Image 1: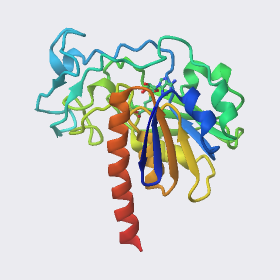
Image 2: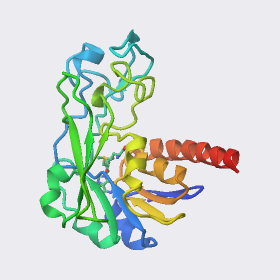
Image 3: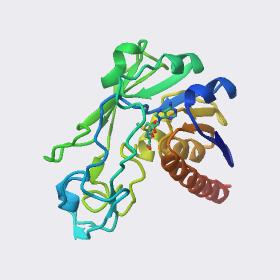
Image 4: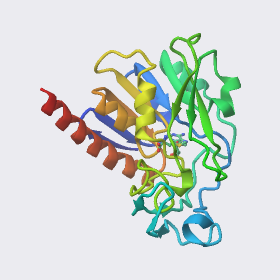
Amino acid sequence: MRVEHIGRATLYLGRCEDVLPTIERPDAILSDPPYGQKLNTNVTGKSVSGRKPGSGRPYAILDKRRKTAAGIHSTGVARQFPQGIAGDDKPFDPAHLLEAADKWLLWGAHKFGQRLPRGRTLVWDKVPTGKVRDQGDGETALCSVNPDAALRIYRLLWDGVCVGSAARHEVTAGQQREHPTQKPESLMAWCLSFLDLKPDSLICDPYMGAGSTGMAAVKAGHRFVGVEVEPMYFDAACRRIDDAQRQGDLFLQGAA
Ligand SMILES: C[S@@+](CC[C@H](N)C(=O)[O-])C[C@H]1O[C@@H](n2cnc3c(N)ncnc32)[C@H](O)[C@@H]1O
């Protein structure tokens, strides 16, 4: 197991089942675990590369500049991820997360919601574009705080695997994709607002991926603990959370 301390964040390279019992009890778990959807992460799509799915070299970087539908000149890259997503080959069981914190907000409720207690439904609408998305046009989360409160929707166009050269909006255009199911940082920041948190709370993402939850948490001034089992995603999370923390601190200094 590797541990990195990055300002207010502590990141573990390892299995969360091993790490969670050893750490301070978090105030909330905010996570996007493997959904059990057997996602093929080795496909960039013809719209990006013109290659047949899976024909690229490992970690292929495919860069094609063109004017997108939204009029944006994208300079981003699309990538293939032959290492896939650990645990995505079987249904996800959230039981151990429900024991690890009193407050939780978990994405993937449309896949494993029947294994969760009652919770408030949150929806991410990726905005239909006419293009068929492998990962669907939206996702749902359940939140343990205020379970009877109204359903809320976050609407943010997200091109999924076509982030980068085929991206049609300002959020992903020009960015490098770090993870096959990367969540927008702004979506995770929105999630924090439903968890009724005090300043300097400890937020945990046991299935951290490339670290979008951690970026949102440290920028909001919280402490963060993240766990990721795949070294390449872990390294991306370390880098992205470090950058986010510097940006957040600069903002706070400017405001003081
Ligand atoms: C759906 S992805 C999370 C993506 C993340 N939200 C992001 O924005 O990058 C789930 C992650 O959990 C990791 N994972 C799977 N099993 C794990 C385990 N037992 N412990 C820690 N991480 C695990 C996978 O490697 C994958 O990166």
